[in-house]
Length: 81
Image (tube, rainbow, N blue to C red; front, side, top):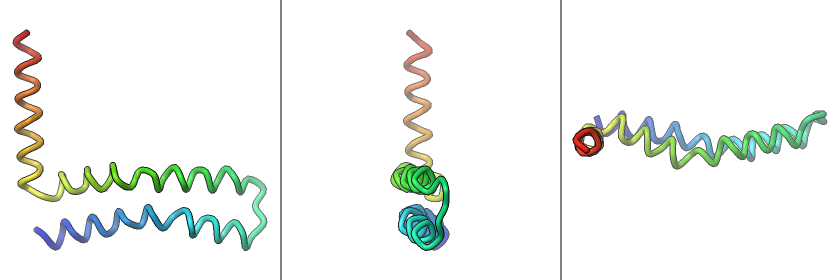
């Protein structure tokens, strides 16, 4: 389980590598909409921490149980008022 979780988190780290590679590809080739493509790749890389947290919760049982337990408590409190 731990190895699977670590592999999933490692694959998410590729989001940090997207902007430098996109910038390199756009610098070598002359693309018409290069600035837009670089902005999109930076937007994707900014999602790294959110996606990593989601992957951590989905792949680690103890975190998943904690989140589910907290979300059920929140739903019960809101539904009673």
